[in-house]
Structures are given as C-alpha cells and as structure tokens.
Image (cartoon, rainbow, N blue to C red; front, top):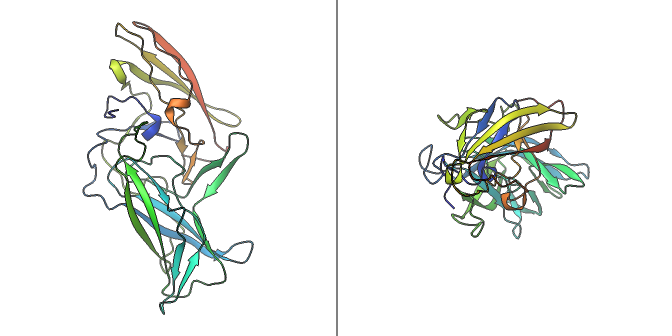
Length: 280
C-alpha cells in the first residue's frame, strides 16, 4: 500500500487537532521531512512518588524520526535507572509508547487512550521504579522500537528500528507546549481541504460538531471512476493542547466505511470521545 498525498488509509497516519480547524495529513511518507532521523526522544515532566511510594517518572515523548511514526518500549526488558555514582536499578513498570498511533513528525505527546471500548482509560506515559530515589545525576534508559512511514496491513512492522532511549532526570520540563514541538512546513492543512484517495476518489471532512462527549466528524467521498471503491480512513483520533491522543487505536481495516459507488458519493460519520475542557 502506497501512502503519499494520494492516500488509501488516512487513520494510519492522520491526526485531527482538537480545535478542529486543521487536519494533519500524511504526505510523502516514505521520505524524511525534517532531515536525518534521530529516532524518538523523551524528557521527564514530573519526577516524584506514586501512590504506592515508588519512584514515578512521567515523560513526554517526541517524534524526531522525520516521518510519521509509532513507538513502543520493549515489553520484555525493564527500564534501567542509573544514579550518579553508577548504581543501577531495574524498573519493571515502563508504560512508554504511542498506543499504536502514528504521530506526525515534529509532534510530541504525553499520553493516549488505552483500555477497551467498553472501559477506555487515559494512559499517561511513565516509568516506575521500586525502592529508589532519583538523586542528582540520575538517568533512565530503556529499549524501544519504532516504525515509520506508511501503514501496511500485511507487514505492520515494516521499517522497524530497535533502539535505546536515555532520559536525563536532572532536566525536567513541566511547561511544554503540545502537540507541536517543531513546526514542519506543509504538514498541517485546513480541515476542509480535499484529499485525493485511492482511484482518485475525493475524500472531504465536510463537518465537525462538538458533542456532549467529544467530537463528531462527517466525511464524504466522491468517486469519479467507473468502479466502486473503498476508502478506509478508519476512525481518525484527535490530539489536544494537553498532549493526549484521544480515540482508542484501531487498525483502519476493521472500521466500517461505506463503499463509494462508481460516479457517486458516500457519507458517514466518526466519533471521538474528548473531555469538554480539552482545547486545541
């Protein structure tokens, strides 16, 4: 599946900004948009104690790969806290990742919606270490993997890179601005811009409504061709000024989207639960 400006799967790499005036589109996904990839970076935003009295390190992760990318800390390896004198401690709780979502290059986030459809939860990004304190000179490191570029249903781990990320705990940033850490020219478009999808089908975000529980997005496709076409946009999430990606991650192929008949149109809606106090 090739995903350039003519795209088949919008959800795989698309985020709507919570203000709903703009949409972030996957454009030229197989090339770097901001120079050589630096992988992902992270910075501590709060270093303190958990309810159980353990060391808790909340973090913000930033996509510096130069492409749309999803990342996840290794599930089979602990994070490692290293103090200034070289003593190391394994930290078995490392909830670091994008929740399956691919984040735009130059964007940063501090959490996502996890759990299930029936019981969604807000999952902040953090690591917890038992029985230690973060003394001056401490660092946190963990293995992680990330994928970049277009979403491929048959090869979801295409372009996978394994790496290690280190966080300097002496540098805590509590006043970060979300979601854009580094603006990239041409990445953000007006929300009503037409998107040319598979087989030249035109996809349009025709309306946005703030509801009691979140946002409802109205979509429309127009098919100029001689054959029916599917445009699997999935259920695009939104990201707000709080750095949280709202919308439980689902792969685009399992989301119901109507077929667009030859020479005709199709309309449908998607919804994302977003608290009323979340701004753009």
